[in-house]
Length: 179
Ligand SMILES: [Zn+2]
Image 1: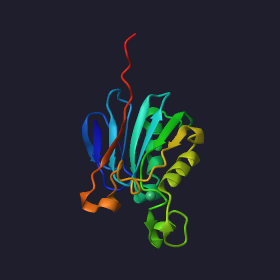
Image 2: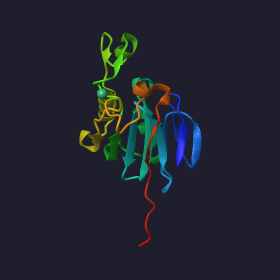
Image 3: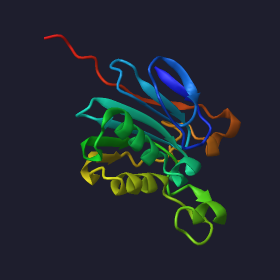
Image 4: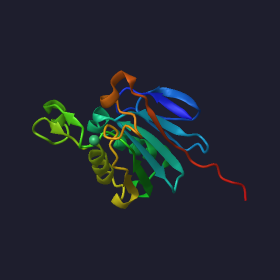
């Protein structure tokens, strides 16, 4: 499994081997058998798969990454590295803090189109960025579960502070089975 030292950026790396690929927040690969992963606890994990070119991405999208369109940065890197067309991409947006709980101040809210402090919809923002970049809406699965609301299933940094654990989301291209 390849991973990152996550820094709430929109930096994207191409993984070619297991271990830490660097400081950034998205990893892409077309190496079969190599999983790319991100760790989250309220921030969103987003996984992408280009089924035509057999390439994948794992993305850590908190408010900073979402405000700087890290999902689009990952998609562009897949286009450049593997020839990915957005229309061939399937996306999974995993558990993260929901609009029910994610209250932010005015400075952050403004980055998501609001004019005052309030709750923002990180999953919706990432979904909209993917659709704007050409990923078919029918290819995007939004889990829609809030990490802060569901202590039985999810870690949440806002809920548990320094005691919060992390969840790992990963995706890989399957090794082709010999026929
Ligand atoms: Zn909630």
